[in-house]
Amino acid sequence: MSGALLLAACSQGGPASAGGDFTDDKVVIGVLNDQSGVYKDLSGPNSVKAVEMAIADYKEKYGDKAVVDTIEVVQADHQNKPEIANTKAQEMYERQGADIILDVPASSAALAVASQADSHKKLHVNIGAATTELTGAQCSPYVYHWAYDTYQLANGTGTTVTENGGKTWQVIYPDYAFGQDMEKSFTAAVEGAGGTVAGKIATPFPNDNFSTFLTRAAAEKPDVIGTMQAGGDLINLVKQYNEAGLRDQGINLAVGLMFITDIHSLGVEQFEGTTFTDAWYWNMDDESRAWADRFQEETGSRPSFAHAGNYSAALQYLEAVQAVGTDDADKVVGNLDGKEVEDVFLRNGKIRAEDHRVIHDVYLAEVKAPSEVTEDWDYEKILNTIPAEQAFRPVADSAAAGCKLG
Image (cartoon, rainbow, N blue to C red; front, side, top):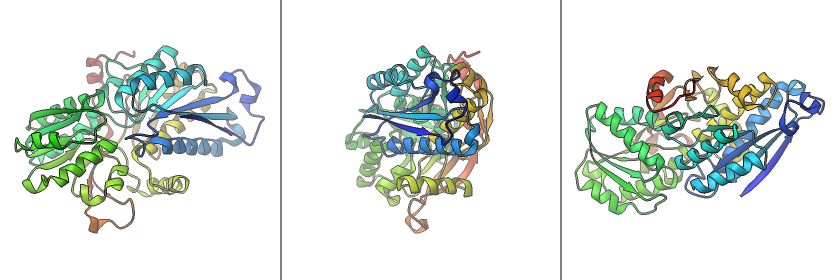
């Protein structure tokens, strides 16, 4: 599925109309994600809406002074398959004239798109994938990792759960790039906090039946089963964990990656008391809630952190285009690198020039009990803010993993 939306400014006399600084006298933003499968709700079509909101805010802010009149959004469904993501990215860059591709959940798909971005010397800002390879061995001058990664998730959840008594773990992970990276990151975090990962169980992706894997894990009597699934796979696993009564057996569940849409889909009672690391929460303060109210008017639902991250990435890209007066990727990169950013998503944000990891505050959260929920979608308690510099792996670790941008 693909489509295009043309958003033209009211003024037709701006710099872009004069031509010369913009390819085809316009900016083209591509959104490539899962629009029909297990990651549809957490990102999907509503990420396109979030990008459109960023474009509208850019145009409202700059009006006649905007350096480009026409901004086009193209979108496609990668179906969580790296070969499709690779083809769609190539089409976006070559045939649809995309200056930048946003989102791209599923780490295997993200790595394929990053390779296309690097070879085309066009931008990719990743919001939806978690692999640290994007800022490690497969980093690129044209690729930024915006929202979260496996190190940040493990550093928050894995460390905290272990320090609070979850000393022995069984880890269940999807057997592709994201899950493999999550397993490694969580194992390092658990062991670093004094715990033990006694078993590591790989599962197919996507998957709808986790009963056998949960039975294998539970047979070892761990303190914690750590699930590294996400989206629809996570919902299936949690449902089957609860049906098996494993919590009543004293086996707690730690969720590596969770979105507000997962809780909404399955019900707060299924996740009650679960601790996890969130990159952003729609109701954490007045600024977030005000943006979430706008988003709900557009979409009918509250935003996940992926939706807010796509808005932020699109807005900061357009701010960079405004600053340099062109869609030339190298000039945009020169503006973005090293920039400190504050917006609705990025709090204490910084775009690191050394590895293109975007760091920002993240949050240790707990799913509320049903009795604590005061309105629909109000499912999280923020337990602690993890400062940006502590949340993400150090630059030296990216360099050790093979990232050389300098």
